[in-house]
Length: 465
Image (cartoon, rainbow, N blue to C red; front, side, top):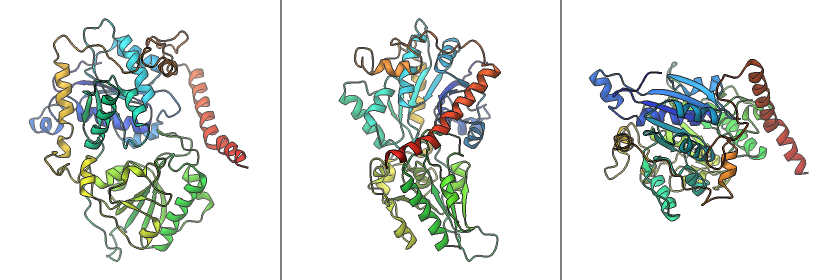
């Protein structure tokens, strides 16, 4: 593999799902030290990092279709176990490592990397964070991420909350670094298209951004689907789209037991109702109204100033995540939407989320543009890379002393011992899996998904009898 250059730093990204690969890879491009992509392009330099992608093998490992939909390219991309990844990090040299994993995965890798890098005079800057809205398990998720050199916060509000948690337990909070969601962008909303305009103009388009696990119950998901279909019937001049994250059999960051694709088979939707897949940004290019329960797509939509609705039909509850949008001005019900209501976002709330249209000011008081949102992270990484004597060993908050009843179980799930050393019998890292092993993996993954999407719901219904 080629070595890094002053213009092209070498970055590794470890991700465990399609969404986290998208966040990790895009973040890598945003925080790469050196000249920005815009500056480099003006000066004719070769821009962008040398990006090596690693996909952590598990239930949510992205399929080729999901990777194509994300649309982020890497110089190399391969599937690995945790132990295989740690072996690669011990043997290869990188400037930056982005851990785009669930909290337990981040914690395991921090301990494994600390062990793998013992005795080395240099190591990469380790970066982690969240793929979207942080509305549950705040303390748990943050403390599992503690120990990385940078813990990225996607907004000013998150940065304040993150520091408060770390300081509240006596942990070092200096790693918290404010940025923004790396996938915001696209053209600002240009206004509604007149549905009575001459042929060739697209119809007014309503998009419902579905979520794999919110809401969870068949009753609630069926309710939302029925309301969406009914909206299409009420407005035949509109195009009503159900934006789905995955196809049946695929998994994303969250488990989806009741795919909307199966629920819609029992309905007879009108011709102006369609299921769509693909990159969320491309769908937003044609959206006039974005509706969701609590998807991060709402922030993407608000960034473009597309009219955005966060539904209250099922209540405003922590379990739904829509409580995060209290104060946003975007909360409304299907009844209100059917009657023509269009929420107006609260500008102060939007500013605190690191969201703005078309790269305009992120805050009301000199917060800078979206393009500059990652400057602080880049500058911090550059200083760490130039630190005399290299970087110190990783120091997570959780250790066998501070969490002796919690940490060993987290590490064991990734075949690591309490000190971060691979356990005996851990998957080998010296060869690619053979054809038989690949077949067994695919069969096991398929059986797991079948159990989640078919067997588990049946057992749950039987338990409710």
